[in-house]
Figure 1: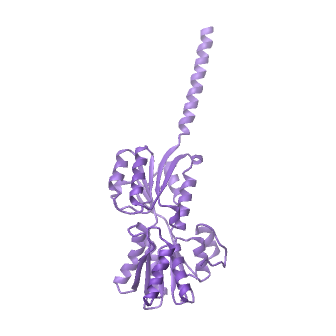
Figure 2: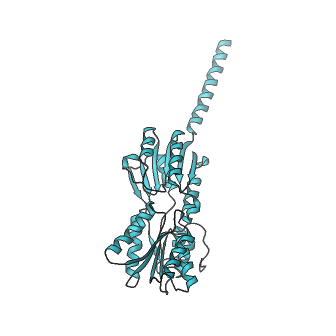
Figure 3: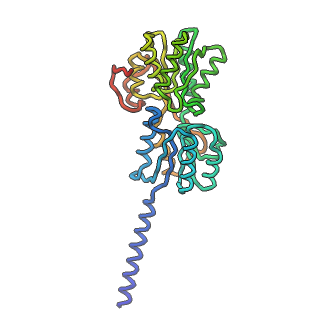
Length: 328
C-alpha cells in the first residue's frame, strides 16, 4: 500500500512537471533582431521605430532588440550580432540598398528568417523570406504625375533628395530624372538633406538656389521635414508659395503637421509613406504564413483640393497640430 502511495505521488509530480514544462514551452518568446534607422531621421522614422517597439514587445510574445543607426556599416555589424545571438527572425530597414549579400546569406545558413521592411535591398530575392515595402518608385510616379499636371509650364524644379543611395531616395528621384530626360521639366537645382534628411540642409539648398538667381516654380522635397526647411527659405526671401503662390510645394510621408499645411493651402501636396509595417509582420510570424517575395503597401497622394479631416485622422502619422494650424 505504501509503495502504491509513493507511486501515485511520483505520477502526480511527473504530471505537474510535464504540464509546467508544456506551459513554459508554449510561452516561449520569439527572438527578433530589428535593424532600423534612428527615430531622429524624420517624423516617418519616429513613427516606424515606435510601431516596431510596441508590436515586438514581451507582452506580445517577443524577445526583441532594435538597433537604430543611419550608418550602413553599423547596421551590418548589428545584423551579424543578431545572427550570432541566434534570433528567430531578423528584420531589416537598410540605410543603403547595397552590400548586404554576405550577411543575408549568413542568416540563411544559420536558419534565421529575414524579413525586410520599409526599404528594399539590392539582392537576390532568395536571400530573404519576404519584404513589406513602400513602393518608392510608385511614390515618385505619383508625385511627378501631380507636378506635370498642376505646375505651370515651363516646370522649373528644385529637387531635394534624402539620404543618397537609400531605396527611398532612389525611387523618389527616378521619376523626376526620367521626366527631365524626356524634356517634361527642368531640374534647376539638385541637392540633398544628407544622411539625416535634414531640415536645415534642405533650407540651405533652397537658399543657395535663390542666391544664384535660379528661376523655379516647384520644390520636390523627399520628406516632410525637408519640405518644411525649403519653405522656411522661401518665407525668408519673401517668395510666395502654396495654393495661390508662385512656388508649388510637395513633400512625402504624411506627417499630420504636413497634411494640415496642405489642407490650409500653405503647401500643395503630400505623398503617403506608411510606417506601420510591424502589425502585418507580426501576423505573418504568428500565423506561420510568410509570403515569398515583395509585398507593397497601398499608398496615395493628397492635395489641397482632395484632403479631408478624415484622411488626416486615418492616414496621418505623429501629432496633429489641429485644423487651420500652420507649421512653419
